[in-house]
Length: 174
Image: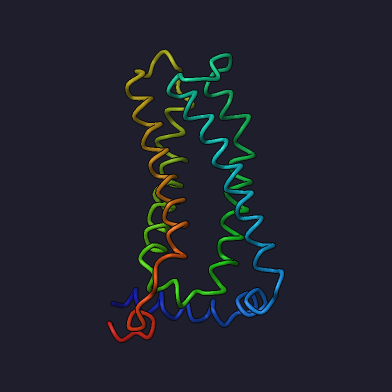
């Protein structure tokens, strides 16, 4: 209950912020920010796809997985930073509406889990000596990564198709 009240207040603040008003009331800012969000998504998705395919030994066999990860790390972190910043700016335009949107909540749950997974267990397996980690374990780790990041993308895509009940936005359900 306490968390829900504070989340609603945060969403109301975002909605009324300089960013929320500025982007919402501009003809060009929302699409401009969305372009950067989608470019970040493409770069992050591409690097993760290559790493996951290599982890499963499906492709890119000429280079060790750890070497690929080191080469891709700046691109992964940079694109994730672009996506988080642009995502916050997009969120600020409809923050109160997103508060009651189950698809947005789904996306945020998958995003937090995917980020934590990518920079902990996933990274440990990717950086490990390929001869010391069983192929089955590597495939499982790659499939979990693909599932988590697909959940983020599908949740994001579903946001526009989910209507938010008025009671969840107004606080009537608290």
